[in-house]
Length: 427
Image 1 (cartoon, rainbow, N blue to C red):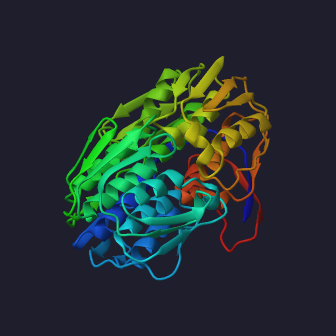
Image 2: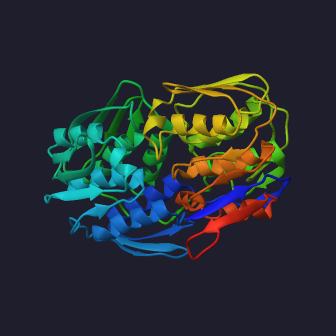
Image 3: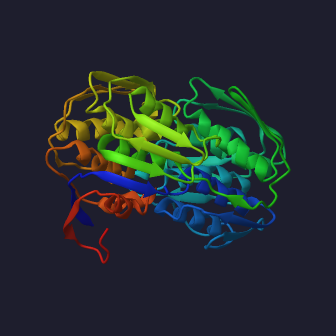
Protein backbone atom coordinates (compact mmCIF):
# COMPACT_ATOMS: atom_id res chain seq x y z
CA UNK A 1 0.00 0.00 0.00
CA UNK A 2 1.42 3.35 -1.05
CA UNK A 3 1.12 6.64 0.83
CA UNK A 4 1.56 9.69 -1.40
CA UNK A 5 1.21 13.43 -1.30
CA UNK A 6 -0.26 15.22 -4.32
CA UNK A 7 1.08 18.76 -4.54
CA UNK A 8 -0.89 20.21 -7.43
CA UNK A 9 0.88 22.01 -10.25
CA UNK A 10 0.20 23.46 -13.68
CA UNK A 11 -1.59 20.87 -15.83
CA UNK A 12 -0.67 20.90 -19.50
CA UNK A 13 -0.93 18.12 -22.03
CA UNK A 14 -2.87 15.57 -24.00
CA UNK A 15 -4.12 12.28 -22.60
CA UNK A 16 -6.05 9.23 -23.77
CA UNK A 17 -8.46 8.18 -21.00
CA UNK A 18 -8.98 4.49 -20.29
CA UNK A 19 -11.67 2.44 -22.00
CA UNK A 20 -15.14 2.29 -20.49
CA UNK A 21 -15.40 0.03 -17.46
CA UNK A 22 -19.15 -0.49 -17.83
CA UNK A 23 -18.82 -1.38 -21.53
CA UNK A 24 -15.91 -3.74 -20.80
CA UNK A 25 -17.90 -5.64 -18.17
CA UNK A 26 -20.82 -6.09 -20.54
CA UNK A 27 -18.63 -7.07 -23.48
CA UNK A 28 -16.98 -9.94 -21.64
CA UNK A 29 -20.24 -11.25 -20.18
CA UNK A 30 -22.11 -11.04 -23.50
CA UNK A 31 -19.32 -12.64 -25.52
CA UNK A 32 -19.05 -15.43 -22.96
CA UNK A 33 -22.72 -16.28 -23.47
CA UNK A 34 -22.46 -16.05 -27.28
CA UNK A 35 -22.07 -19.30 -29.21
CA UNK A 36 -18.70 -18.94 -30.94
CA UNK A 37 -15.71 -16.61 -31.02
CA UNK A 38 -15.84 -12.89 -30.30
CA UNK A 39 -13.04 -10.36 -30.24
CA UNK A 40 -13.06 -7.52 -27.72
CA UNK A 41 -10.79 -4.64 -28.74
CA UNK A 42 -9.56 -1.93 -26.37
CA UNK A 43 -11.06 -3.39 -23.18
CA UNK A 44 -10.19 -1.79 -19.87
CA UNK A 45 -7.93 -4.19 -17.97
CA UNK A 46 -8.63 -2.95 -14.46
CA UNK A 47 -9.08 -4.94 -11.27
CA UNK A 48 -12.86 -4.94 -11.68
CA UNK A 49 -12.68 -6.26 -15.24
CA UNK A 50 -10.29 -9.00 -14.16
CA UNK A 51 -12.96 -10.04 -11.65
CA UNK A 52 -15.49 -10.27 -14.47
CA UNK A 53 -13.09 -12.27 -16.65
CA UNK A 54 -12.52 -14.69 -13.76
CA UNK A 55 -16.28 -15.10 -13.31
CA UNK A 56 -16.77 -15.75 -17.04
CA UNK A 57 -14.00 -18.33 -17.05
CA UNK A 58 -15.56 -20.00 -14.02
CA UNK A 59 -18.72 -20.70 -16.03
CA UNK A 60 -16.81 -22.13 -18.96
CA UNK A 61 -15.83 -19.29 -21.28
CA UNK A 62 -12.34 -19.46 -22.78
CA UNK A 63 -10.79 -15.99 -22.69
CA UNK A 64 -7.40 -15.08 -24.09
CA UNK A 65 -6.51 -11.60 -22.86
CA UNK A 66 -4.73 -9.42 -25.39
CA UNK A 67 -5.39 -6.80 -28.04
CA UNK A 68 -7.89 -7.87 -29.04
CA UNK A 69 -9.03 -10.23 -26.30
CA UNK A 70 -10.48 -13.41 -27.81
CA UNK A 71 -13.52 -15.00 -26.17
CA UNK A 72 -14.80 -18.47 -27.03
CA UNK A 73 -18.22 -18.62 -25.45
CA UNK A 74 -21.41 -20.58 -25.39
CA UNK A 75 -20.51 -23.90 -23.74
CA UNK A 76 -21.38 -22.70 -20.26
CA UNK A 77 -21.86 -24.61 -17.02
CA UNK A 78 -22.47 -23.83 -13.38
CA UNK A 79 -19.22 -22.63 -11.79
CA UNK A 80 -17.43 -24.96 -9.41
CA UNK A 81 -16.80 -23.39 -6.04
CA UNK A 82 -17.54 -19.90 -4.76
CA UNK A 83 -17.33 -16.93 -7.16
CA UNK A 84 -15.30 -14.16 -5.50
CA UNK A 85 -16.05 -10.83 -7.19
CA UNK A 86 -13.52 -9.04 -4.95
CA UNK A 87 -14.33 -5.27 -5.06
CA UNK A 88 -16.44 -5.30 -8.22
CA UNK A 89 -20.11 -4.49 -7.63
CA UNK A 90 -20.88 -4.76 -11.34
CA UNK A 91 -19.41 -8.28 -11.47
CA UNK A 92 -21.39 -9.28 -8.39
CA UNK A 93 -24.71 -7.99 -9.70
CA UNK A 94 -24.49 -9.12 -13.32
CA UNK A 95 -23.07 -12.53 -12.43
CA UNK A 96 -25.77 -13.08 -9.80
CA UNK A 97 -28.41 -12.70 -12.50
CA UNK A 98 -26.58 -14.93 -14.96
CA UNK A 99 -26.46 -17.69 -12.36
CA UNK A 100 -30.21 -17.97 -13.01
CA UNK A 101 -29.28 -19.95 -16.14
CA UNK A 102 -28.06 -22.93 -14.15
CA UNK A 103 -29.87 -25.64 -12.16
CA UNK A 104 -27.13 -25.92 -9.53
CA UNK A 105 -26.67 -23.68 -6.49
CA UNK A 106 -23.93 -21.08 -6.94
CA UNK A 107 -22.49 -18.88 -4.20
CA UNK A 108 -21.04 -15.43 -4.85
CA UNK A 109 -19.14 -13.23 -2.43
CA UNK A 110 -16.76 -10.27 -2.45
CA UNK A 111 -14.61 -8.12 -0.22
CA UNK A 112 -15.79 -6.24 2.87
CA UNK A 113 -17.15 -3.36 0.77
CA UNK A 114 -19.14 -5.66 -1.52
CA UNK A 115 -20.59 -7.53 1.46
CA UNK A 116 -22.22 -4.27 2.59
CA UNK A 117 -23.99 -3.57 -0.71
CA UNK A 118 -27.68 -4.37 -1.18
CA UNK A 119 -28.78 -7.28 -3.37
CA UNK A 120 -32.35 -7.81 -2.14
CA UNK A 121 -34.30 -6.38 -5.10
CA UNK A 122 -32.36 -8.49 -7.61
CA UNK A 123 -32.72 -11.67 -5.57
CA UNK A 124 -36.46 -11.08 -5.19
CA UNK A 125 -36.81 -10.59 -8.95
CA UNK A 126 -34.87 -13.77 -9.69
CA UNK A 127 -37.04 -15.66 -7.20
CA UNK A 128 -40.16 -14.49 -9.03
CA UNK A 129 -38.69 -16.03 -12.19
CA UNK A 130 -38.25 -19.41 -10.52
CA UNK A 131 -34.82 -19.23 -8.88
CA UNK A 132 -34.08 -20.19 -5.30
CA UNK A 133 -32.04 -17.44 -3.65
CA UNK A 134 -30.35 -16.85 -0.32
CA UNK A 135 -28.30 -14.04 1.18
CA UNK A 136 -27.00 -12.45 4.34
CA UNK A 137 -30.01 -10.24 5.11
CA UNK A 138 -30.16 -9.06 1.48
CA UNK A 139 -26.40 -8.60 1.13
CA UNK A 140 -23.56 -10.83 -0.12
CA UNK A 141 -22.61 -13.58 0.10
CA UNK A 142 -25.57 -14.68 -2.03
CA UNK A 143 -26.69 -18.07 -3.32
CA UNK A 144 -28.67 -18.63 -6.51
CA UNK A 145 -30.13 -21.86 -7.89
CA UNK A 146 -32.04 -21.72 -11.18
CA UNK A 147 -33.15 -22.20 -13.74
CA UNK A 148 -35.22 -19.07 -14.19
CA UNK A 149 -38.03 -19.25 -16.73
CA UNK A 150 -38.60 -15.64 -17.78
CA UNK A 151 -42.08 -14.14 -17.96
CA UNK A 152 -43.30 -11.13 -16.01
CA UNK A 153 -40.88 -9.70 -13.46
CA UNK A 154 -41.09 -6.53 -11.37
CA UNK A 155 -38.14 -4.76 -9.77
CA UNK A 156 -37.52 -1.47 -8.00
CA UNK A 157 -35.58 1.08 -10.01
CA UNK A 158 -34.57 3.09 -6.96
CA UNK A 159 -31.47 1.18 -5.77
CA UNK A 160 -29.26 0.27 -8.72
CA UNK A 161 -29.63 0.09 -12.49
CA UNK A 162 -27.22 -2.86 -12.35
CA UNK A 163 -30.07 -5.02 -11.07
CA UNK A 164 -32.08 -4.32 -14.22
CA UNK A 165 -29.02 -4.77 -16.45
CA UNK A 166 -28.50 -8.17 -14.83
CA UNK A 167 -32.08 -9.28 -15.55
CA UNK A 168 -31.89 -7.92 -19.10
CA UNK A 169 -28.67 -9.79 -19.92
CA UNK A 170 -30.03 -13.05 -18.48
CA UNK A 171 -33.32 -12.91 -20.40
CA UNK A 172 -32.26 -14.11 -23.91
CA UNK A 173 -30.85 -17.27 -22.26
CA UNK A 174 -34.27 -18.22 -20.80
CA UNK A 175 -36.98 -20.24 -22.50
CA UNK A 176 -39.78 -17.68 -22.21
CA UNK A 177 -39.92 -14.05 -23.27
CA UNK A 178 -39.32 -11.62 -20.41
CA UNK A 179 -41.13 -8.41 -19.55
CA UNK A 180 -39.24 -6.44 -16.90
CA UNK A 181 -41.29 -3.70 -15.24
CA UNK A 182 -39.26 -1.13 -13.33
CA UNK A 183 -41.22 0.24 -10.39
CA UNK A 184 -40.81 3.64 -8.77
CA UNK A 185 -37.92 5.97 -9.55
CA UNK A 186 -35.56 4.86 -12.31
CA UNK A 187 -31.91 5.61 -11.49
CA UNK A 188 -28.97 5.71 -13.91
CA UNK A 189 -31.13 4.92 -16.95
CA UNK A 190 -28.34 5.71 -19.48
CA UNK A 191 -26.67 2.50 -18.32
CA UNK A 192 -29.81 0.59 -19.36
CA UNK A 193 -29.53 2.14 -22.81
CA UNK A 194 -25.91 0.98 -23.00
CA UNK A 195 -26.99 -2.52 -21.95
CA UNK A 196 -29.80 -2.69 -24.52
CA UNK A 197 -27.55 -1.35 -27.29
CA UNK A 198 -24.80 -3.87 -26.61
CA UNK A 199 -27.23 -6.78 -26.22
CA UNK A 200 -28.56 -5.91 -29.67
CA UNK A 201 -25.07 -6.00 -31.15
CA UNK A 202 -24.66 -9.51 -29.78
CA UNK A 203 -27.93 -10.64 -31.38
CA UNK A 204 -30.54 -10.17 -28.65
CA UNK A 205 -34.02 -8.80 -29.32
CA UNK A 206 -34.55 -6.18 -26.61
CA UNK A 207 -36.72 -3.07 -26.40
CA UNK A 208 -37.11 -0.53 -23.61
CA UNK A 209 -40.17 1.69 -23.51
CA UNK A 210 -39.91 3.88 -20.44
CA UNK A 211 -40.04 1.69 -17.37
CA UNK A 212 -40.82 -1.53 -19.30
CA UNK A 213 -38.13 -3.69 -20.92
CA UNK A 214 -39.17 -6.53 -23.24
CA UNK A 215 -36.64 -9.23 -24.17
CA UNK A 216 -37.19 -12.18 -26.50
CA UNK A 217 -36.33 -15.47 -24.81
CA UNK A 218 -34.68 -18.54 -26.27
CA UNK A 219 -32.45 -16.61 -28.67
CA UNK A 220 -29.18 -16.63 -26.76
CA UNK A 221 -26.42 -14.46 -28.17
CA UNK A 222 -24.27 -14.55 -31.30
CA UNK A 223 -20.56 -13.66 -31.50
CA UNK A 224 -19.62 -10.08 -32.26
CA UNK A 225 -16.34 -8.22 -32.63
CA UNK A 226 -16.70 -5.23 -30.34
CA UNK A 227 -14.47 -2.22 -29.68
CA UNK A 228 -14.84 -0.71 -26.22
CA UNK A 229 -15.15 3.10 -26.33
CA UNK A 230 -13.30 5.55 -24.11
CA UNK A 231 -14.85 6.09 -20.69
CA UNK A 232 -16.48 9.45 -19.96
CA UNK A 233 -16.60 8.85 -16.20
CA UNK A 234 -12.79 8.52 -16.25
CA UNK A 235 -12.46 11.38 -18.73
CA UNK A 236 -14.07 13.63 -16.12
CA UNK A 237 -10.85 13.65 -14.07
CA UNK A 238 -8.44 15.08 -16.68
CA UNK A 239 -11.14 17.50 -17.85
CA UNK A 240 -11.60 18.70 -14.27
CA UNK A 241 -7.82 19.03 -13.94
CA UNK A 242 -7.75 21.26 -17.01
CA UNK A 243 -10.57 23.43 -15.67
CA UNK A 244 -8.91 23.83 -12.26
CA UNK A 245 -5.27 23.95 -13.23
CA UNK A 246 -4.24 24.57 -16.81
CA UNK A 247 -5.12 23.18 -20.23
CA UNK A 248 -5.80 19.49 -20.85
CA UNK A 249 -6.95 17.75 -24.02
CA UNK A 250 -8.51 14.27 -23.95
CA UNK A 251 -8.52 12.20 -27.13
CA UNK A 252 -10.40 9.21 -28.51
CA UNK A 253 -13.84 10.40 -27.37
CA UNK A 254 -17.19 9.69 -29.02
CA UNK A 255 -19.85 12.29 -28.20
CA UNK A 256 -22.46 10.12 -29.95
CA UNK A 257 -21.95 7.17 -27.59
CA UNK A 258 -24.95 6.45 -25.30
CA UNK A 259 -22.80 6.80 -22.16
CA UNK A 260 -24.66 9.01 -19.73
CA UNK A 261 -21.42 10.32 -18.23
CA UNK A 262 -20.67 12.37 -21.33
CA UNK A 263 -22.88 14.85 -19.44
CA UNK A 264 -19.65 15.93 -17.69
CA UNK A 265 -18.99 18.25 -20.64
CA UNK A 266 -22.30 20.09 -20.22
CA UNK A 267 -22.03 20.13 -16.41
CA UNK A 268 -18.61 21.80 -16.53
CA UNK A 269 -19.82 24.28 -19.16
CA UNK A 270 -22.83 25.18 -17.01
CA UNK A 271 -20.43 26.02 -14.17
CA UNK A 272 -18.55 28.41 -16.47
CA UNK A 273 -15.80 26.13 -17.75
CA UNK A 274 -14.10 26.75 -21.07
CA UNK A 275 -14.64 23.39 -22.81
CA UNK A 276 -14.11 22.83 -26.54
CA UNK A 277 -15.14 19.61 -28.32
CA UNK A 278 -13.69 18.98 -31.76
CA UNK A 279 -14.27 15.56 -33.27
CA UNK A 280 -12.84 12.97 -30.89
CA UNK A 281 -10.91 15.63 -28.92
CA UNK A 282 -12.14 17.62 -25.92
CA UNK A 283 -10.06 20.46 -24.44
CA UNK A 284 -10.62 21.99 -20.99
CA UNK A 285 -8.96 25.26 -19.95
CA UNK A 286 -8.59 26.89 -16.55
CA UNK A 287 -11.76 28.85 -15.85
CA UNK A 288 -13.55 30.99 -13.29
CA UNK A 289 -16.43 28.84 -12.03
CA UNK A 290 -19.76 29.58 -10.37
CA UNK A 291 -22.10 27.40 -8.36
CA UNK A 292 -24.85 25.38 -10.07
CA UNK A 293 -27.51 22.81 -9.28
CA UNK A 294 -27.09 19.36 -10.86
CA UNK A 295 -29.40 16.34 -10.84
CA UNK A 296 -26.94 13.47 -10.42
CA UNK A 297 -29.57 10.73 -10.65
CA UNK A 298 -28.57 9.63 -14.15
CA UNK A 299 -24.81 10.16 -13.65
CA UNK A 300 -23.93 9.15 -10.07
CA UNK A 301 -20.35 8.19 -10.93
CA UNK A 302 -19.64 11.85 -11.71
CA UNK A 303 -20.66 12.98 -8.21
CA UNK A 304 -17.20 12.95 -6.54
CA UNK A 305 -15.39 14.90 -9.23
CA UNK A 306 -18.24 17.34 -9.87
CA UNK A 307 -18.40 18.09 -6.14
CA UNK A 308 -14.62 18.58 -6.11
CA UNK A 309 -14.74 21.06 -9.01
CA UNK A 310 -17.56 23.03 -7.39
CA UNK A 311 -15.85 23.20 -3.98
CA UNK A 312 -13.99 26.34 -5.13
CA UNK A 313 -16.69 27.73 -7.43
CA UNK A 314 -18.16 31.11 -6.53
CA UNK A 315 -21.39 30.75 -4.57
CA UNK A 316 -23.37 27.69 -3.55
CA UNK A 317 -24.01 24.48 -5.46
CA UNK A 318 -26.51 21.67 -4.92
CA UNK A 319 -26.04 18.12 -6.17
CA UNK A 320 -29.17 16.02 -5.78
CA UNK A 321 -31.22 13.08 -7.06
CA UNK A 322 -28.78 10.23 -6.35
CA UNK A 323 -29.59 8.36 -3.11
CA UNK A 324 -27.87 5.30 -4.64
CA UNK A 325 -24.55 7.02 -3.88
CA UNK A 326 -24.85 5.56 -0.38
CA UNK A 327 -24.27 2.07 -1.85
CA UNK A 328 -21.19 2.52 -4.04
CA UNK A 329 -17.61 1.44 -3.27
CA UNK A 330 -18.02 3.72 -0.29
CA UNK A 331 -20.93 5.79 0.97
CA UNK A 332 -20.00 8.46 -1.53
CA UNK A 333 -22.20 11.15 -0.02
CA UNK A 334 -20.37 10.73 3.28
CA UNK A 335 -16.91 10.23 1.78
CA UNK A 336 -17.13 13.18 -0.63
CA UNK A 337 -18.37 15.65 1.95
CA UNK A 338 -15.75 14.42 4.43
CA UNK A 339 -13.06 14.88 1.78
CA UNK A 340 -14.12 18.44 0.93
CA UNK A 341 -14.52 19.50 4.56
CA UNK A 342 -11.26 17.83 5.57
CA UNK A 343 -9.41 19.82 2.91
CA UNK A 344 -10.85 23.11 4.14
CA UNK A 345 -13.97 23.39 2.01
CA UNK A 346 -17.60 23.53 3.07
CA UNK A 347 -20.05 20.76 2.12
CA UNK A 348 -23.22 19.48 3.75
CA UNK A 349 -24.51 15.95 3.10
CA UNK A 350 -28.13 15.43 2.10
CA UNK A 351 -30.18 12.29 1.57
CA UNK A 352 -29.52 12.31 -2.17
CA UNK A 353 -26.38 14.40 -2.64
CA UNK A 354 -24.87 17.46 -0.99
CA UNK A 355 -24.85 21.23 -0.74
CA UNK A 356 -21.51 22.93 -1.38
CA UNK A 357 -20.56 26.42 -0.26
CA UNK A 358 -17.75 27.52 -2.55
CA UNK A 359 -14.52 28.85 -1.06
CA UNK A 360 -11.65 30.68 -2.75
CA UNK A 361 -9.23 27.79 -2.29
CA UNK A 362 -8.78 24.67 -0.20
CA UNK A 363 -6.17 24.22 2.51
CA UNK A 364 -5.04 20.66 1.81
CA UNK A 365 -4.48 17.89 4.30
CA UNK A 366 -4.98 14.15 4.66
CA UNK A 367 -7.85 12.32 2.95
CA UNK A 368 -9.20 8.88 3.80
CA UNK A 369 -10.22 7.66 0.35
CA UNK A 370 -11.85 4.56 1.92
CA UNK A 371 -10.44 2.43 -0.87
CA UNK A 372 -12.77 4.13 -3.34
CA UNK A 373 -11.10 4.85 -6.67
CA UNK A 374 -13.26 7.87 -7.48
CA UNK A 375 -12.62 9.47 -4.10
CA UNK A 376 -8.87 8.91 -4.50
CA UNK A 377 -8.75 10.51 -7.96
CA UNK A 378 -11.01 13.39 -6.93
CA UNK A 379 -8.78 14.18 -3.97
CA UNK A 380 -5.72 14.17 -6.23
CA UNK A 381 -7.45 16.64 -8.58
CA UNK A 382 -8.42 18.76 -5.55
CA UNK A 383 -4.71 19.31 -4.84
CA UNK A 384 -4.70 21.71 -7.82
CA UNK A 385 -6.71 24.21 -5.73
CA UNK A 386 -5.07 23.48 -2.36
CA UNK A 387 -2.53 25.73 -0.63
CA UNK A 388 -0.81 22.60 0.74
CA UNK A 389 -0.67 19.08 -0.58
CA UNK A 390 -3.19 16.25 -0.31
CA UNK A 391 -1.89 13.13 1.42
CA UNK A 392 -3.49 9.69 0.94
CA UNK A 393 -2.88 6.02 1.60
CA UNK A 394 -3.92 3.26 -0.81
CA UNK A 395 -3.43 5.29 -3.96
CA UNK A 396 -3.36 1.98 -5.86
CA UNK A 397 -7.17 1.80 -5.60
CA UNK A 398 -7.37 3.99 -8.72
CA UNK A 399 -6.55 0.81 -10.70
CA UNK A 400 -10.19 -0.23 -10.32
CA UNK A 401 -11.10 2.09 -13.19
CA UNK A 402 -8.02 4.14 -14.18
CA UNK A 403 -4.83 2.07 -13.88
CA UNK A 404 -2.58 4.76 -15.39
CA UNK A 405 -4.01 7.68 -13.46
CA UNK A 406 -0.97 8.66 -11.37
CA UNK A 407 1.50 8.32 -14.24
CA UNK A 408 -0.68 10.27 -16.68
CA UNK A 409 -1.23 13.10 -14.22
CA UNK A 410 2.47 13.28 -13.40
CA UNK A 411 3.23 13.55 -17.12
CA UNK A 412 0.81 16.48 -17.38
CA UNK A 413 2.42 18.35 -14.49
CA UNK A 414 1.00 17.00 -11.24
CA UNK A 415 3.67 17.13 -8.52
CA UNK A 416 3.72 14.03 -6.32
CA UNK A 417 5.88 12.50 -3.62
CA UNK A 418 5.87 8.91 -2.40
CA UNK A 419 5.95 8.89 1.40
CA UNK A 420 5.74 5.14 1.93
CA UNK A 421 5.45 2.13 -0.35
CA UNK A 422 4.97 -1.34 1.12
CA UNK A 423 4.46 -3.08 -2.23
CA UNK A 424 6.86 -4.01 -4.99
CA UNK A 425 5.71 -1.27 -7.36
CA UNK A 426 5.61 2.49 -6.94
CA UNK A 427 2.66 4.33 -8.58
